[in-house]
Amino acid sequence: MTYAKQVAPEYQEDDLFWTDKNNNLRMNDEWFEENVIIVGNKEFKEFLTRDYEKLIGLDWWEYENFKNYGFACVTDYLNYYLPRKDGKSWSGPQVAAWKRIIKDEDWEEGLRLLTGLVWRSVTIRGCMQREWQEMLVSENISDAQVNYIEMCYFNTGMEFLVYEDDSEDSAYSVYVRDEDELKECCGVDKVYLFDGWENSDILGWVTGWKRKIEDVRLFRFATKKAWENSRRMWVDAITLA
Image 1 (cartoon, rainbow, N blue to C red):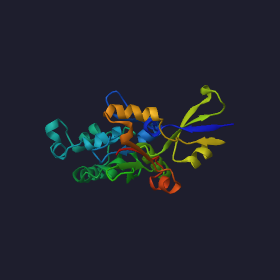
Image 2 (image 1 turned 90 degrees about the vertical axis):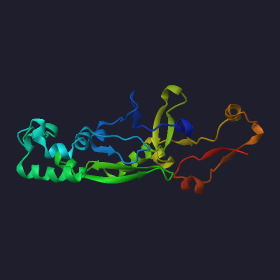
Image 3 (image 1 turned 90 degrees about the horizontal axis):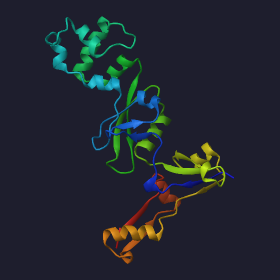
């Protein structure tokens, strides 16, 4: 029998994002890294592609005064800072388009010209008002993939350990939106949802707060309606009386 156990929400991790030693946001999938840009809300980590970094690094004054930087013409300036993927020189119409793009900071159009792909702007959201972020995604990214990125970025999904038998060695981790998705992707026969922290865990937290266990009340919203209203996040809150 295949079964799954939910990981405690405070310990769950998504399977897409990670942070490197320099505290920069990275992705586990190169496909996403080449087709997704996350930027907009400075309260949250951003993720930039190399092409996007080249674009936003351009300066209109430098562009207008290219001769001061040793370039014979503006085409040479563009070929140096924004080389075409095929190694060719930018054409006259393309140079004219770059002038407008750089002046207006139209980075969606700049990405299209630089990568050959159509890009669009989308907004992803978490469960709180402050949890939002802007993304630029290429035509390679579907709406379903945008939803997946949103879930992973704000960690609104659920992590499960799936066991193919009773051996701990058989367990593997999956990160999904809900139980239905878990059953669909893994074919599990039985699901064990996280059912709260042990009293010993609560006592440890209270001791850290220098409060008595009697001063703590544990609230759980475990009804189906509350579950759906919280966007399928398991809502457990320890509240001081």
